[in-house]
Length: 232
Image 1 (tube, rainbow, N blue to C red):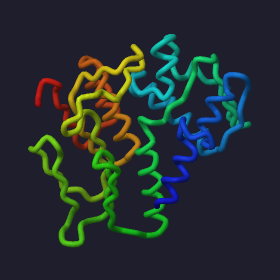
Image 2: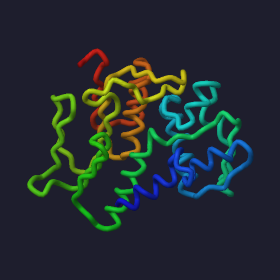
Image 3: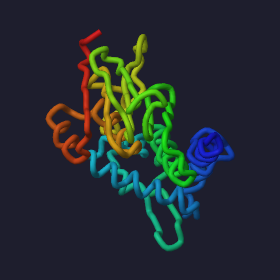
Image 4: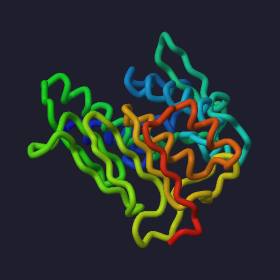
């Protein structure tokens, strides 16, 4: 499983000079770049998520916030050649808002392939994948940070976005304004798919209240807890 995470980091990092996304960001504004089939699929998936969240989830948030470019308008894709070209020099892709979900999704496939029935995988207690049950029970117990929610998990994914414990610095960019601005203190989501869970929890932090329920309905989470900013 460690190799799965390392391989994804070497693909999706925008800071590692050997990473595929780093090199894509360096070259794609100049000409079309052929990329791996897997990265191409993640980019296409991210475009669909951008549409599903009314544009509030966006791996190309810098160009959107500064220049009003929707993600689908930033990228010129060739499905046959698996090439990507950026529509302008301002475009940069950042998978930070979906990377943990992708990693957990790949780990879920690994567990299935290896026929591992029971597992609890946690990335910093903010992104969690469960399979099967606890060795001493019928489920995996999990107490959420709100202090009031206790979950009984079997085959689920949890994503928690927002301020954790003593954190006071926002880390999610609203792509429509290009600024760090939360509308909620924290969002806790339970879904079957770890990528869906991460995208939804991240999106709800910044989406306007009037659009939140519409977005939630599209994902249909088993649980979705929204904690207002004013709560301490």
